[in-house]
Length: 582
Ligand SMILES: Nc1nc2c(c(=O)[nH]1)N[C@H]1C(S)=C(S)[C@@H](COP(=O)(O)OP(=O)(O)OC[C@H]3O[C@@H](n4cnc5c(=O)[nH]c(N)nc54)[C@H](O)[C@@H]3O)O[C@H]1N2
Ligand SMILES: Nc1nc2c(c(=O)[nH]1)N[C@H]1C(S)=C(S)[C@@H](COP(=O)(O)OP(=O)(O)OC[C@H]3O[C@@H](n4cnc5c(=O)[nH]c(N)nc54)[C@H](O)[C@@H]3O)O[C@H]1N2
Ligand code: SF4
Ligand SMILES: [Mo]
Image 1 (spheres, rainbow, N blue to C red):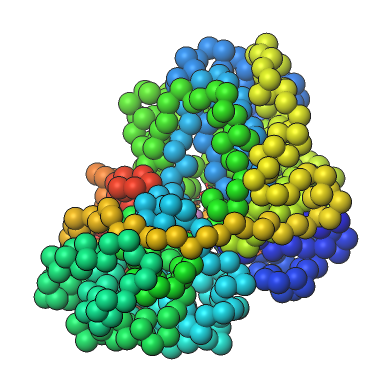
Image 2: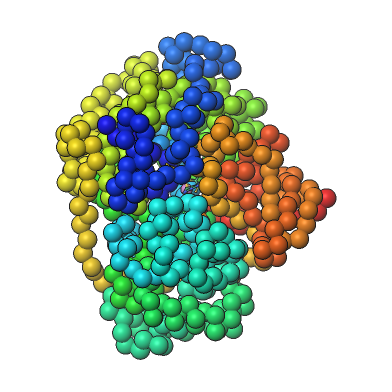
């Protein structure tokens, strides 16, 4: 028996079910993180043990009845399901969306994290599939571009820690500290830096650009930008940018493109241009972003999109606005903690408190969102249910079997109970989930039967080196000037999770120069934060960790910009705020 950790994490560690020891298989290699080490303990803390209506414990039947009643009394195009990657199991995350699609309810665009980069890379490569773990080992050097891999991607980091490493960041991250070379640039200026590097490489390489379909177009494009403006906007000198270019020429590094970039202003432009660098150098699969869409899993089938469609799509950036404007009356949440994670989530909180929105949360833990919900239904954790888990880095599929008794009701059973209460019978809801999964895996070459037998199965990823399209090339936009609030991963938390183990502290923002309390302002909202000094931070950078987003007093996401990005709709989260000293 084995279990893969289902948290939103590059690594997707696999454990032996019996004693929950990390398996010593490549690329997870027998070690795990502080969260993985405390999962068994955490599994017993802060759990939702009973369904709650308005905070009162009720029987499951009553809670389901209440949910059905709310759904019945609401126009379906005013019901939004919010689900994200709290559990990366194919049954837990994707399949339960079928009910909402059958009803014609609203869906989000799933854009909060990585869609920007997927779409940007696909424009050029046709697929966002990049280097696989085996490839990581083949490179002599690695560029970490907008990636705090030391904390966010521990097994990826471990595979390359002895290689020549370069970090490109806006601050002295842990990854930057531990790299051989580091370049600190101005926030949201990565697209200009990419153009600078491409410009240098174009001139140096003359006619050698084996993977690009139209290198001349790229040459004309980069010539539109002058060194003076690239230097001014990035904050790096031409000679520093040429130094990065030299490293690219000499060492042909793997470029790890961090998800943080998609959450900067016009971050898709940056990711698209960065992805062209290895193509220009002729390095096949010379980048890594997220391999989730390259494994052949039919996520759309799992969600039932071949049969039913959501009533409409709501950008995750705009859920708060829709709620404020009365366009949403019911939020049904699983696998996600939207008060924590969505920009302008204060609008959701206000509407829930004023009774304008009914909030139903299905979660194993009393999340920030569950705490204010009208109805909370307990879910089993990944240690307590069967599922099949994939990774966005490695190409193993893992068959999870429970090692702890289930607390609560799993997502699919709950979905069917609600459907029954609503009097709905539909082939999408009734289809056996394992048969559906088997079908959704058809292009991976892996069957559910084989997974049940072998537990861990490697997907043979189909790869062919094709020409990379140079177009479209974006017209770059200068990032706004001002203070930037910048987020990153903390080693002890995954997004909002693990506050029950590692205590949640006062909202702290680090900056170069001040100590004391300050106000951050954005979207007409103000949030008080405690400012601590970190002299390594460049002036103008306000840094915090993702788990600080919610405190007893405030929702930090009230002030993040949330502008919708160009390719995949990812909101700007690492963006400009106003700083008012107290
Ligand atoms: N321990 C831990 N691991 C995690 C997570 C976690 O919460 N904790 N979260 C998981 C999830 S959901 C995700 S999306 C990934 C995220 O992991 P990463 O892709 O590593 O992204 P972040 O941690 O958001 O930020 C990475 C770096 O980007 C820098 N950065 C911010 N703005 C800019 C910019 O404009 N330009 C450049 N060049 N750099 C910038 C930040 O300073 C930071 O050091 O990690 C996953 N892994
Ligand atoms: N300002 C700002 N905002 C951000 C970010 C940022 O850098 N800055 N980062 C963004 C990123 S990268 C991401 S990915 C999002 C993450 O946003 P969310 O997906 O909201 O992240 P989590 O906090 O991990 O919430 C996951 C929830 O799923 C629950 N869960 C876990 N397992 C299960 C299960 O088996 N069943 C059910 N029903 N529930 C389960 C957990 O208990 C938790 O409450 O946040 C984004 N928000
Ligand atoms: S959070 Fe990531 S590193 Fe930690 S156990 Fe889970 S998959 Fe492994
Ligand atoms: Mo994420």
